[in-house]
Image (cartoon, rainbow, N blue to C red; front, side, top):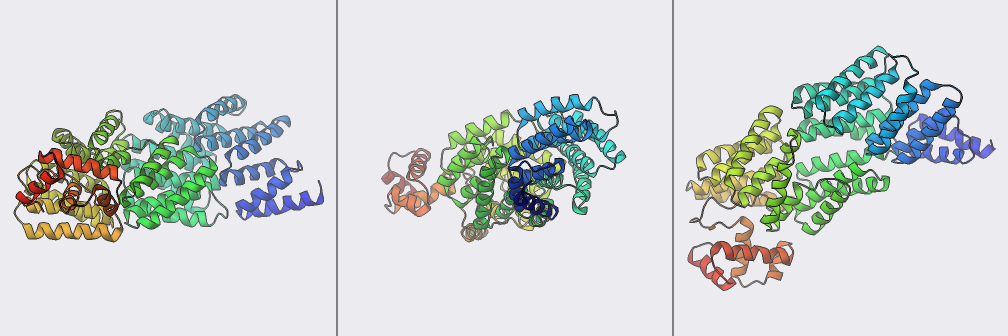
Length: 544
């Protein structure tokens, strides 16, 4: 070993011991060029590489380590190498390659004792695959619980935490959220104690936050995202989990109405993940960016981000359907949501689709489908029992009742939704509820309250730099709007002043194509054939 190589190796070991991962990776790479790494150094090099997002380099280092161990007859640590490779590949989306390693490592495992910790790790990995890939929740849960017991017997904190994580996610996906969250919280005890390896700690952190976001438990999600941020800050040069942390933070910032900050976090996350080639994480970050752009009214950027998210394997629904609805393309929105709902059976996924489905179905006049979906959402709110899901369910019930002409029931449900969103610190959703409260007040003849609620909602949107949220048609023809949505009324008022479609598009920060579609919808709904006739109709029926 040359003096320079020896110096690089010492610097790498010191950096890894202090969790300065970028520095460790650099110096291990320099030493590796001189073939200076022993089996322990290859293990440290793999950890640094993985935490920096270089999964292929990490797998290569562990593969070489396993070869050295097998050559010297050390089967048990060689099996551990295979287990870490599988874990890295599964967590990075490399399912096919992970399958090959599961088979290879399984053969090596045959020579180990039946109650070895390594068998527990392999059982936990099989449980993960059963739950996350094959959707066999109960079978996966049973395997995970068995591996928890093995971990306890062998005092393997990493194994216990990984297994508790799989068990918790399986229970949540199987419709048992309270039991599932208990298991995830138990796993987090080991994380916050500092007893876990960095890779396992990061996996459990992100899995818990993802589970909280799936069931809209934003209070718990916020708490653990702050903890993850502190943990990431203590791992110098970290990439893999910092990108996920940025995505989680972007989601929470969007909920808090801090849209500019949310967009910056999402863009940073996208940049980190694209560079690391992490398919699942990149798709999620791009989807969050698309949602932020949609809410801000930057429809072109939203469309681009949704398209790119789809390219990374992330389903762009329901966000893309809501974008189409905002652009006035109700047919495309309805087709997408009907397809998504029709092919989705898992409760946690339907939980995310149903609010948008209700909104789109009401926009296209399918009141029966909207009512059925609102009932299902209420049932899921009882099951998952989080404030945000209850708020979404109340909003859906109120919107459906408003469309059916029952303004009193609508008002009660909508005020319930508005209160819950306000207490959660979600101003955008609060404003969406206020718009519909204004509609209900109008139906009940309380014009002053209707105006106050509508003005308050629009002021919130203006303060946030957001577009108007809910754009449901009013209950029935015969009211001022004659079935036009808020956006269509806004466009009609500008049409009546003689403003061209291009000028309207510039004023409302929309594309000219979107305004053309809105004007076409206006003419159809009012039963007229020209802009001049639409203006005359609007003045005649006191719509302006």
